[in-house]
Amino acid sequence: MSVRRRSRFWVETGLGVLSGVAATVILVVPDWIEVVVGVDPDHSSGALEWYVVAVLVVSALAFGLLARREWRQPALGLSTER
Image 1: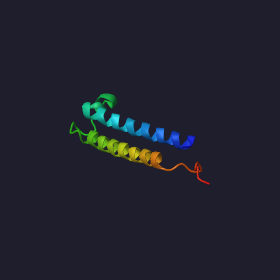
Image 2: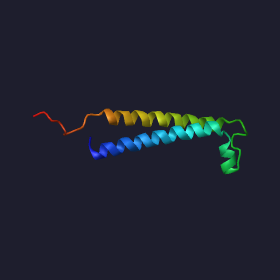
Image 3: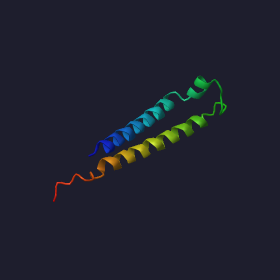
């Protein structure tokens, strides 16, 4: 596995984990937007937080699939057969 592919795998894995952790934190602290920004954009309905969680979950799954594809891809030019 080349260094470029290995680093790409780790970047995709890190971004997937970061997205998953962020989604979990938002589920635990659902009013974080009101606390951080000081504005209540969805009038306490929680809809905005659910949209953010949905985007983060989709991105975590996408990064996970990209990392899996990168890991399973055969190494190019490293064949031992002649």
